[in-house]
Each structure stands twice: as structure tokens, then as C-alpha cells.
Length: 546
Image 1 (cartoon, helix red, strand yellow):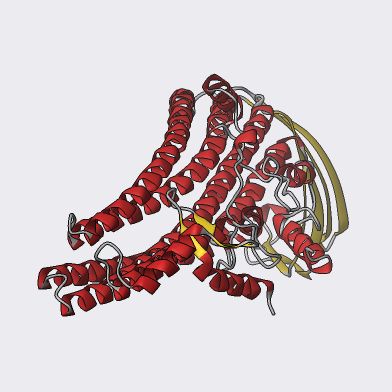
Image 2 (tube, rainbow, N blue to C red):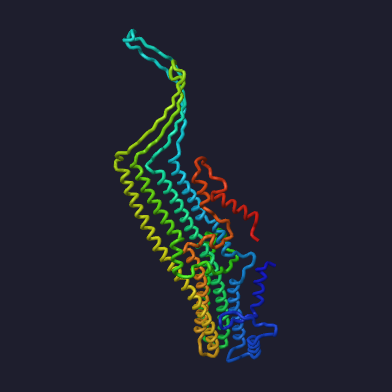
């Protein structure tokens, strides 16, 4: 039998032996010495028939209700138990998103396109070489001037020739007003800005994956709680109808029980719909449907110890800030590149040309030309000046955006820190609420049996306990998410810090190979993001995880 099925079967077999304690947990009523006092008390009440005005049927139903309510705690506790070998941990889900998410892979491809800006800029110091050839047919007829001693109708014809030839031309820039240097630095700054943009996208995808993962866990737990609530209310409705038949309660009590059950069924339908939405979002972000998910462990050890440390680390490592810094540097170099268009340009040109049959009297001609050229711009119709002013305005914009990025990042860090502290406090508050509501429900039910409370009071107490349990599940989800949001705010949400079971993608590997590449139009084998992805999947297929 499958281990997970054995676990479920064991839980089902243990349900009759479970009793909810005052704290909302579950304690086993069977021990090696026999039944506990609670179980003996239940047996005694059933055997005597009526205790404190309670009928046999009501007593049995009350015991069943406690068992069913205990099953909810057992079901929710299964969510917190260590997963079996077939389950999927959060890190495994993040690894799947790291490999397969199309948005992240698209950004990797865009980064490789950005890398090519460096060899494009470096082409300004390299020569250009061209070859051209031609062949044609020429027929030459020339009229003779009277001064040549011939009549006006005299002419001379060379007949038909086939002129042809070829030439090699080489052009080399010697000085371009420092435009090549500034263009290269601008391209490099864009590369590093793109790397930080890739880090930002990676953080966003991983954070979305964490959110999708824990949303499924939360909604699964809420569905279990609401399913248990429906079972409890159905049992209570049956018990209320039985008591109505013997005259212990009124028709109003029966109607209130029916209304409570209908409301619980509606809430259960909504919870199941939310779970389907979460599962669909999980598949979209991570790349496959969720299976058996584990409750993630806390990553508090990866977070800064104090709020001040978090702000300082974010100022140095947050990808949004670093992206803005590199874009500001790129804008500065762009100004220098445009200013170079106002300076003289010096080029060297050489040409080797050979012609054949240029005329019937010339068999071939060979020409070699060496030419130095100086171009001094005097007036460019105001276009270059306007472009320089535009670039300077862009530089001021980038500098302002850098300051704005620092301010925004600081605010995000402080907000994330506050959300984490709030989530921790909310968990403690919700746990206290669960414990108190469990005690209150027990007391309300006891008072309802002796006529001091109504069925509506019991329904309200049951709803309060359910709401506090749902709130506790949501608070635990919020705490896990707050930890990852804070890690992203300081710039640490990546595959290295999380120690994901992946082959880490290094964007600098492609850049180092591409920047000095001056020939070829194909991708370098083994360094592109597609090659990295193919090699990774091949390695995983050859060595599957144990």
C-alpha cells in the first residue's frame, strides 16, 4: 500500500480514539492502561441514558460531533507533518519555476541580446574590409574631329570589349572623438543594468512561486476546516430534529440549525473555488500542478537581525537600486558619446583595384591607393546639439530615478519588516483566540443542554471557533510570505541564498564570451541560456533526485 494511503487509513482508524482538548488540539484517549477518564465518562453517560437532562440520542450525537471536530484537527495536523517521499517541498517548487518559468527565461534571452551591445560598440576600433567585382560589355564608337584631318562624317570605332575587375577596400578609424570609448562604457553599463533587471525578475518569479505554494496550502487547510464544519452542523441539525420530535426544542431551533448548515455549505463551495484558483495559479507560475505540498520551514536565519541592518543591506544589494545606478552611468557615457560628434574624425582608407579590358588598347590595370582623411564638423544643422541636450536631460532623469529607487526600497524594507512583526504577533493572537473559543464552545454547549443557552448561541460559538481557526491558518501563511518578501526587499531572494537544488544560471558567462567576439553569427555552444537549460535538464534526467 502507498505510504500516504497508509497514513490516511491510520488517521481514520484513530479518529474514534481522539478527543478535542481545551486548546483546540487532539489527545488520544486510548493508552496502554486502557481508556482514559473522558472515554469512561462517555460510556457511563450512554449506559445511564440521561445525564443532566440530556437524552441518549443527543449524548451519542454529541460524542460523534467531538470525534468529527477532532478529525478536523487531525486533518489539519496532517498538513504540518513531515511529507512522504512523493511530496514536493517549497525549494523543489522554486527550482521548477527557476527552470521553466517563461517570463524568467524570456528575461535571460533579453539579457543575452543586451550583451551584444558591447561588441557592437567595440566595432568602432576595428577595420571594415569589403570586396567588390564587376563584369560587363562595352561597345565604343568615337567620331573624329575635323581637326584630325577627316571629314565630318568620319568616325573611329574600337569595337566591343568586356571590361571587368575587382577591388579590395579597407577602412580604419583612427580617431572618432572618443565615441568608441564612451559607447563601449555605455554598453557595459547597460549589461550590468540588465543583470540587475534579471535579478529583479528572478526575485519576482520566486516570490510569486512562494505565494502560489503557500496559497494552495492555506486553501487546502481552509477547505478541510469548512468540510469538517459542514459535517458538524449536519450532525447537529439531525440531533436538533430528533430533540424537536420529542419536544425538547422548538421549530425555531431547527430552522436556525438548518440556516447554519446552509451557510456553512455556501462557505465550503467558496473555499473550494478559491482552492481551484490557487491551484491554477500554482501551475501557471511553477509549471506543473501541485501534488503533496509540505509546510515550508522558516527562513528567519537568512534575514537581517535588525531593521537597520536590513536597510543597509538593501542599499547595497537591492537590484532595483543597482539597476538605477548602472542606468545613470550609461546615460552619463551617452552624453560623452554624442559630444564626440563635435570633434574631428580621422580615418585611413586603402584600396587595391585591378581592371581588365578597360579598352582595346589596355589589357589590364592595377591600382593601389592609400588615403588619410580628416573630417572636421563645422555645423550639423543643430541636430547634434539637440541630441546632446536631450542626453543631458536623460542623465538628470536617471540620477533622480536612482534617488527615488533608494527611497522606495527603504520604504519597502521598513514595510516588509513591519508586516513580518505583525504576522508573528497575529499568530500568537489567533492561537490564543482558538484556545479561548474552544473553551467557550465547550461551555456554551454544556449550558445549552441545561437550557441556559439556545441553539443560536451554540452556532455562534461554533462559527467563532471556525473563524479563529481560519484566521490562524491565514496568519501562518502571511508570516511565511512576509519572510520571503523581506528577503526580496534586501536583494537576497535568489537561487544562491535559498540554496535551491538547481544549476545556477550565470549571465556573466555569456557576456565574457560575447564581448570580444568579432566573427560569426551563431550562438556559442554551451553558454547561451538555451544551452544551459538543455544541459541542466539532461543532467537531471541522467541523475534523477532520490
